[in-house]
Image (cartoon, rainbow, N blue to C red; front, side):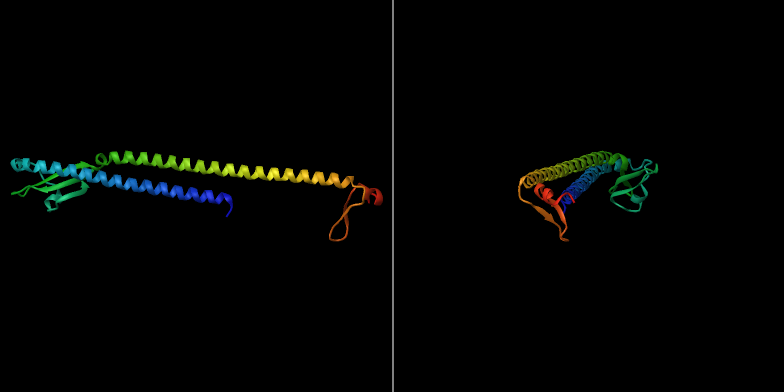
Length: 196
């Protein structure tokens, strides 16, 4: 496997872990907020039931879901056309129901704020991880090319030394390719056979 792909794979695994952790944290936070809102709405509903027993002769009309006998926590649209989360409770010894509701936008506003914070944090972590992997990859590439440069310099130095040694030897030294054609000769060979 080429060197750069290992870091890319590490980045992908790291990014997937960060995103999965973010989604997990967001889901837990959402469940916590929902449970807290349900608890608050249930507490309000329980407090108001006793007051409604005394006040049931007044003009309060129950929500349609409560009138149909539904009880507990429900989501729906209120009389203003706004999405709400509501707690429905029946008033004992009467045909009345208590509806305590809160706008969904108001209830989940802190969760939306946390979601943006999480998106910012996850984005920053992904950016930092990418920059770190990129920096390491760049460093390794520079090291690789630096090694190649030093190897080429060493080879050039050896070649120059070999050419100097071979040119100063008084004996005839010649190089022949696979077709038996002379491709190189030292100074003694060139003096003996000529430049052709």
